[in-house]
Amino acid sequence: MLLHTLNAGSSTDSFRDCLRSSQSGDAIVLLGDGVYCALANSAARQALDDCPARLLALASDVFAAGIADRVGDVALIDMDAFVALSEFYPRQLAWY
Amino acid sequence: MSAAEKKRSLVVMRQSPYGGSLARASVDLALAMGAFEQNYDLLFMGAGVLQLVTGQDSQKIGAKNIGRILTSLPLYDMESVYVDAAALDRYGLNEADLVLPVSLLDESGLRSFLNDADHLVGC
Amino acid sequence: MNYTLLVLSSPTSGHSAQTAAKFAHSVIARGHSIERIFFLDEGTTNGSRAAVFPQDEADKLQPWTLLADEHGVELVLCIASALKHGMLDETEADRYARAGATVHPAFIISGLGQLIDAASNSDRLMTFGD
Image (tube, rainbow over all chains, first blue to last red; front, side):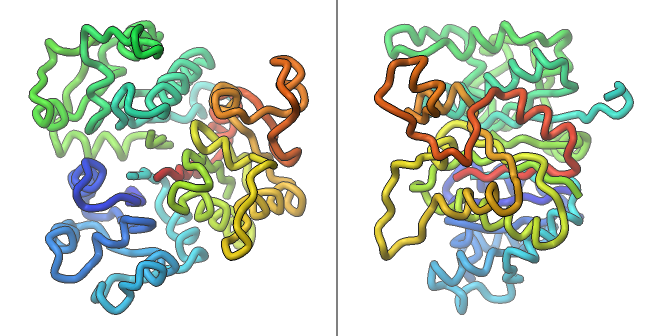
């Protein structure tokens, strides 16, 4: 069970390799420029929805980007919830 | 700390050797882990596989030869260096292009391998 | 739980380093402890006492110094990275005959062993890069 933190746009090796490394039981938290991968109807979002990992995004970064009403049903989390996720998942891998 | 309690770390190397300073810093981390007798493995993914390419000659760009440093790591067997096979494909490379003998991981091997370590360091 | 944080980003590239500092404050607020925060590569520039941030932007240094001053969190800059980035404490400034210290006193300069040691004593290792 891995907590993937994705801070990279969808054109990067990081994005592709994050998805390839994710499996059922993992979670992917989008933060920084990674939040744009959640944009509804984008190819990146489709790839994330096809991936069996749980998808979440850091609310502050989604609001900063102005896309809160364009990310559909992604779970938006605050810092406290981010820490709670790190308690649950024993290991984290940072993609950036 | 006893051997039984010793945590196993996996350092995931994803940076090209000379595109930034993080590749060198992560190689230094691997060296330090060896020096401190840590239980660790290296996994090269994405552009990180470019650190392993043979024939690097970085003298003229004023940088230390990352490929050479990697061959000096105190790795006692080929089980210690893992490479995402898809990353080699992406760059048109194969094992003969690399400075070290490596273990290749396919996608499912990669996913289970990432779950074996206690700590992951994503560099 | 006991956490170690590894910060790879500078305070000016994206806001990953700020996220790391906020994460650290939340870790403490949730009743956990922080074994150490280790800054590597460009992350070492978070320790600059000389950087001046515009008044209409957040102070990027204070969240770190608060962790040290109010919660006793150890903030360690990797020595090899710190020197390359001009991050010197009094000792290093003297050793290399530089004009003066550039690192805020809340930070310590030390080797990679400090990261390895902290991680081996921690339940969680969280990396922040961008």
